[in-house]
Image: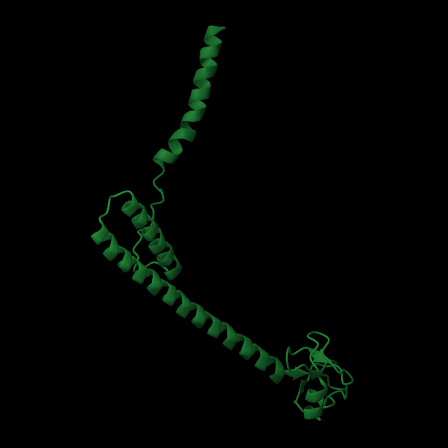
Amino acid sequence: MPITSILIGLALLAATIPFVAKPLLNDKRTKPAASDSSVAAPHNRHAQTLTALRDLDFDHRTGKITDEDYAGLRAALLAQAAEAIEQEDRQSAERDALIEDAVRARRQHKTDSLACGQCGAALQVNDRFCRRCGAPATSLCPHCGHAAGADDRSCAACGASLIVSQAVAS
């Protein structure tokens, strides 16, 4: 019985060695990225600056940093945090402007590309009937671009009034 136990133990040890050694022998270990605050994204820079401020405050409370050094370092870190926030705001405004431009272009494309509901032929803005098949043309909601029938008074998609838009289109 003792020899059987020893052999089972050796078999288990031999089976676990590859699992334990694999991470140690793996050459594709991931290295942490260098954190250069000038290259980091503004959000990361802002978070890093706030972490540095927290650490600075802690070091000052524990007496590791003198009052003179603390005041200068804190002012510099606050300036960096403000700069990171301003950069985030600029990027957010640029992103919002791009989104608004894309939405505006999409809405313009919707209103420019009127098509017959029956045959799919292109319609002009003032067309009341399709030139190819003679089907009545549907109008589009000026707010959302959803198709509306000739007798509709409000848009079924957004609820906007269509009375003014139909009067103008007539």
